[in-house]
Image (cartoon, rainbow, N blue to C red):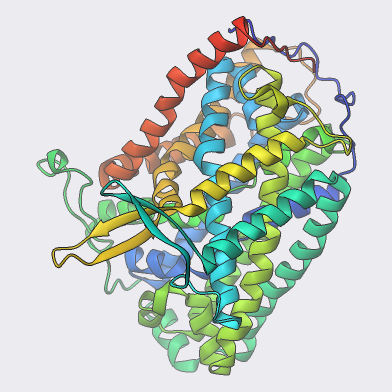
Length: 520
């Protein structure tokens, strides 16, 4: 263990210096729900339906995601009650393994997982605002793309500017104190939950299409137009077969595993309330309950939303929805062109609330790392409003960089197209995020051995069976991703491993130049 840190010797819920315990059970649940529901639920059903090839496969994918997410949340509750401190999963990994593993998680979270998600949601906000205000265009340049080598560029379009302004605004709001941040979170999460409920009610009761229902539910497990899933690297092709969901049990297993990329990403961020544990009034109880209640609410809504899609649209229309906007296609089928406007408003509300929760929570991990001497020293200090203001600023700066950076591609005709760097990075880290979830869940078993007498106000539901089943299921999905999404999974692992030299350099620098000790 690096001597820049020391292990927590107590599970006390004493106030950490300057933090304001302002979050109750409702607030915590709203952070979980609001951080989980972004724009994914309105989009990813198209790709999932292409991978699984059947209405039953689409619903089963979400049921599996729900079982995985809820079992993980019920398991994490033990760690949240055991270590009710700022930083959440970073602290759990640090205490179960070592500061190195905590750092690798915090590094990946800051570099890509949290910040990349926030960048994607911010640009999604701007994209759908552009439906209402066409002047917010990705092709109206303030700064034309400037090439940074052959594969990358930097630019500023009006759409990017709106995304950046959203980040600056929400970062500033959250520097003013957790009370204001939770107020915005509660209002926007309530609004978008009602909007998603409205979509479900409209799809199931108002816009139900007899033809679509007959086709979807009379042939619930019939696989059609399923995407062929190829091994993710040439060297795998000699012993890993290309499959579709129709290729027997193994093909269906692979399809469901690959489909989890979209559904698990849409259901991610349920652990964010753990990052803010130092600001929860009764963290030993409410962090675990917030995780459980929040994930159950969201997964129920997600399953019902996909059911609404199947009531409204035949499977082929879900598979071929323009730009994968399945929810927009469903509302368009009910209301015509005005449906797209209604969906745009719903997603604007959803993405705004989602980013507020992600920005609020993410900075607490950087704060905890800085307290351990593993991030910029100033990030480990709270401002006069009792929040990690510097950590919020560092986070906001990096998110802005991710929004401005672009991927650059030149085709055979010399035509240049630009993508978003954060989109590529997010593809890479699904595997890495699963890796850390598995390691953290294993940490429950390790800590039962290492600290058998520690106070555990909440014990993992169904221990040891539920946590063990989660570990096995998540490991199986990781294996599928390694075989069939090799490039993105491998790149995610590389991002994690790059953190190794960074950790040792930062530890060396911290010990010799700016020693800081955790004082929780």
